[in-house]
Amino acid sequence: FPFTKLYTFYRQMPFSRQLVAVVGNVDAGKSTLLGVLTHGELDNGRGLARQKLFRHKHELESGRTSSVGNDILGFDQQGVVVAVKWHKRLMMMI
Image 1: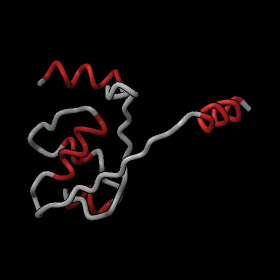
Image 2 (image 1 turned 135 degrees about the vertical axis):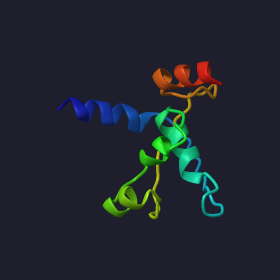
Image 3 (image 1 turned 30 degrees about the vertical axis):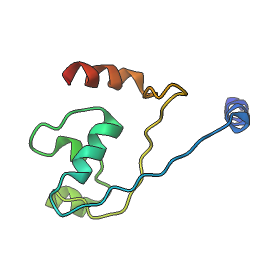
């Protein structure tokens, strides 16, 4: 399988992993911030960025995230965001 070679390649690479917890009061913007960082789209003022993190039907219906989750945001060795496609678009908006 092609995946076998890909998996082996990545297993041999040194990997540094940092975990970041985002905590705060209700309606402080935690999910919006994570949605923007991990999906690369600014919020439209009506929760578009936050909706990218919804995992359950009740979250979609209520408009509030209520589950613990994890997402990946990757950087290269120079500290540049790996998802170049959306990162360039985001940098143009800032």
